Every structure is written in structure tokens, then in C-alpha cells.
Amino acid sequence: MTTALAGGLRPRVAKKSDDYVAEFQKRASADGSVPQMTHEAKRQKMALILSDEIGGIKRLGVGMIGPIQLKLRYQGLIRNVIIEDPQQPGTPTEYDVFDDLGQSYIMSCTEGEVRVTPFEGKRVRVEFFRIASRPAIRKEDLYSMRVNMVEQAQDETKQSILKQEDTRLMTLLLASVTDYATRPDNPTPGAQNVVVASGGLTPEALYAAVTMTDLREIESKRILVNPADYRDFYLFDQNQTGWAMKDRVVAGEKITTFGEFQIQRSVIVPRGKIFLLPDPNFLGVFPVLYSLDVEEDNRVESFWKGWVFDEMVSMAILNPRGIATITKSSYLAP
Image (cartoon, rainbow, N blue to C red):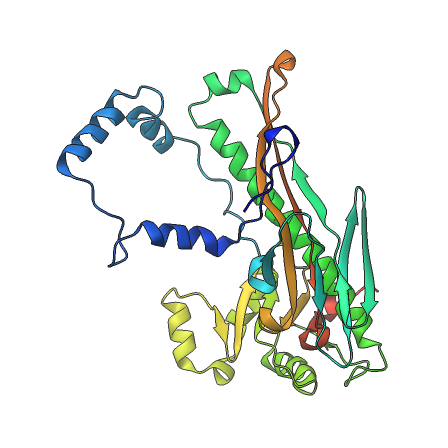
């Protein structure tokens, strides 16, 4: 049952990433493949593509001779770090903290302001904030450029919003790990960060950091790291990693795990700071009131074609016990 809004508008509903996969699987056949088209349907489809002067074979050819790629596509962190939780419009969003220590951290954002407020207790309520972007391209570029400017602008905007999400996540993680380290009810008070005196990241630093969370009866399973610090894994001595790992690296394989840890890198992670996190089920939530929405926002009189991308989200760390950090001394403030 859906509620109709004034003017006949339908409410925008949050959609979890896994739901898109489920929809595809419903359309797939028993062996997991998409149902095959008949010979006649294929012939008609090909004829339609060949007759399309705008979006068919010519468009494909233009895409192949487009500009070189300037950078890798940004892959978002947040949905792999905390649990994505779609919400129904009009329903208050509250979470229980099942822990005697009852400590949680909520991200609260307004225009031009980021505020992180600790909440103590057994039940916390989150307020949603908007993440938005307004891309625009000149009308003449649609005709003078051979590439699809619309797709390029929209794809870059989606990546920009992913970066905004992850930037707020980093702010929330830094605030929670700093505050929780000094709390008297912390089983390891004052022990939340390991400083590497000199050089790069070492296995000793990783195991010293995870020992802190072990003493809090929780396991850290993931490592968040900046790409520059990620390269330290390639410099580990063979006496620490074994020749098998060195052989795989030389053969071209990337290091995605080390020991008990799964490694995830991002340019949004502060350089010189390494985060150890538990499984998402033990860390926090990413409530989504409505998913990324796109609406046209053309400025006809100025000959600009534009859009508004926006989403209503929030985020909360409900259990900081599994967070630990490693800091390189070369990046500490003098």
C-alpha cells in the first residue's frame, strides 16, 4: 500500500542496493541467465538499432572514439562499512543500542555545518539530511562534442555524491573513535590508537591495534586505508608474509586481504590514518529516506542543460567498541 501525496504525486521510496539484484534475478531463468530472445525478435531488434541515427550504431562508434579516461571511477565505501537501511516516509527512525555501555554517535548535518553529537542511552533517533549536486552542461557542447556529455556529467555527479557520503562517514568515525577512547566505561581507556614511530605500516602495528578491540570482546575484520598507505603492504618483508604472497604480488595480483583483515582503500580516508573496523553488523547503520533522485533543472535562457541529484540519508555509529586506528608519526601535527 502506498500513500498518495497532494497533487497526485507518489512518494519517493528508498531502495536498497540488493533490491536491484533481486529484480534482475526475478527476470532471469532457472540457470541464472536472462531469457533468450527468439530469432525474429533478434532480427527486429537489430533492424531498430541500425535504423537509429542518434542512439544506435553511430552512438556506439562515437563512444569508442571518445576521450581518454582521466581517472578511475570512484567506488563508495559507506555501504560496505555500515548497514544500508531503507526507511518508510513519515516514520520516525530510531535504533536500539543493545549494550550495557550504551554509546552511539549520530551524524547531524545542516547547510554549511557538520555537527557530531554523542547520545547515551538505549534508544537513539536519527535525523535525515540532504546530499545534493547540480551538474550542468552547455547546450553547444551537446552538438560540438563527439562523446555523450549527458552520460559523462551524470556519472561524475553520482561519483561526487558517493564521495560526499564517505567524507561524512570519515568525520563520524574520527569523532566516535576519539570520544570513546577517553570514556571511563571503555574497557581499554585511552587505548584506541597505535602510532607508528617511523617508516610505513607494519604487521606489528596491525596486531597491536586489533588487540585493543579483542579486549573489548569484539573482532576487527576490515581495514580502511588511503591508497598511498595501502602500498605499505607491498613493502612487508618476506619473513612476515612468506614467499607465496610475494610471488602472487610479482605475478600481478592485488593485495585484498592480510591475515584476518579485509582491505578496502579510498582517497577519502585521511592519509597517514588507518582504520580497523568490525563487520558492518557490529558497527552502525546508514538509514536512507529516499534513494538518489534525479530531476531536470534546465536554464533555457542561459543555454544550460542541468539536473538536480539529491538523496535524504543519515548515518550512525551504534557500537564504537570495534574501532581502532593506526597513525603514522610522519603525519602527526608538530
